[in-house]
Amino acid sequence: MHAAFARPSFAAAFIAACVLLGLFLAEVRSSRLQSKYGAQLAQNYLHLIDPLLVESAQTPASTAP
Image (cartoon, rainbow, N blue to C red; front, side, top):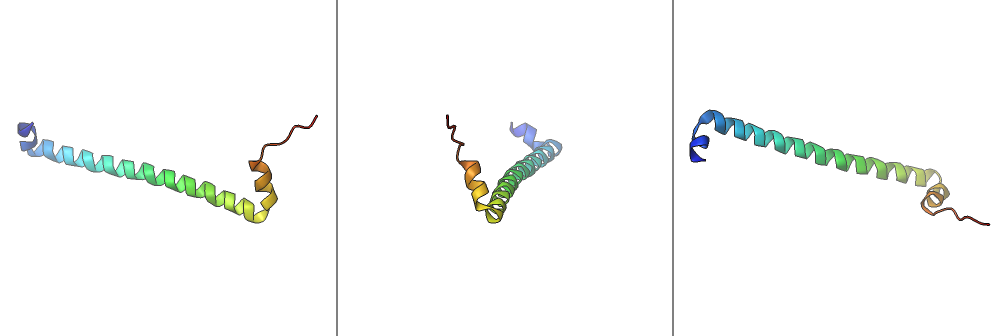
């Protein structure tokens, strides 16, 4: 293991791979948070426009005989 990291080309490639993996994971996390925020913003907008619309969408419709 020490011999592999002693080679500068392998060490540089390993560091670059770790940095790219970190950037990718940060982008995935940021995308998820942005998606959740967008959904929450849309729900808040609907509630602002018509509060009864949001409440009726959240409660199941009753099936009367």
